[in-house]
Image (cartoon, rainbow, N blue to C red; front, side):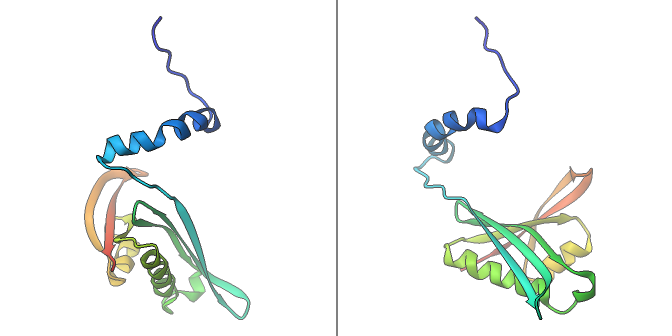
Length: 141
């Protein structure tokens, strides 16, 4: 009987993934991996008003910036930089060796990340919305 490939909802695979995840990670990386994924959210608040937010995800000693949003009227006040600094402090606490972020290549977002100490690690051609995306990194510790 041939193997059948099905499209399923994520919860349909959850039990199988839990049962085989540790061995699969060991096989993939070549050593035993303890993988704890975390998400950390940050808000910049002034007089009860949220001016900006940021989110990072942490897994395998790597923090990934998932987003930094600052209200248009609050930009260029250091709020985005302060959010990333707080995210770096949390990443350091969890022994992350670097933080990564993506931004459209050549964009103001890329320039902002570079001003915050990030460096281009790679450019992925036509990666998101058919745009070239810069993958930036900042080493920690």
